Image 1 (cartoon, rainbow, N blue to C red):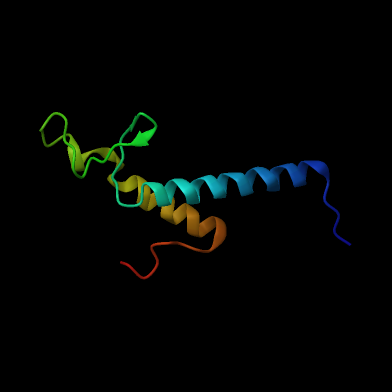
Image 2: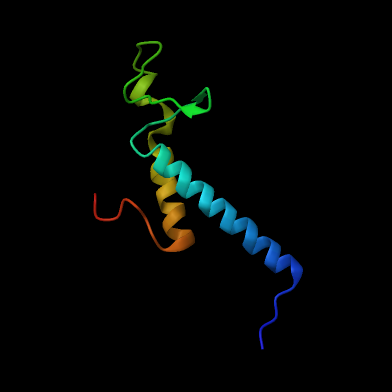
Length: 86
């Protein structure tokens, strides 16, 4: 018989909270390439290039950020909102 101690229950609750927040945040910023937050919202470097240089805007380092999150999402719960779109 499998028994769960209080630490296992706590860890599972935290993991569930992280997954719920990542799902919410991923949906909220689905069509953005974020760099930072402005008034609690991610900016979108695909449409905003503050310095107007190649090193800014859509070329910024976060281009791989959401792809990495999608991989992590699939690894954690076996699902991805982007499956079948690539």
